[in-house]
Image (cartoon, rainbow, N blue to C red):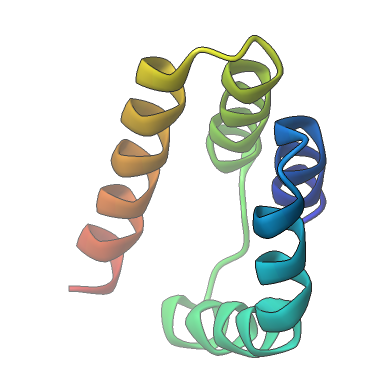
Length: 81
């Protein structure tokens, strides 16, 4: 979650910051529930995926940020299937 916050802050996008602030509490609840379902917590690969996402945002590399975000979400979806 902290990596996501850093990524949002690095975007320097006021609308994105406001949006993130508005759904952070619900997002946190959903993440806790997902971890309960998966019965495992983020490992090094999960942390690395978030760190790479932040790096892409800081570097203002839209293509890499989109690709990394999509890949991470697909990994989560597949893990829950």
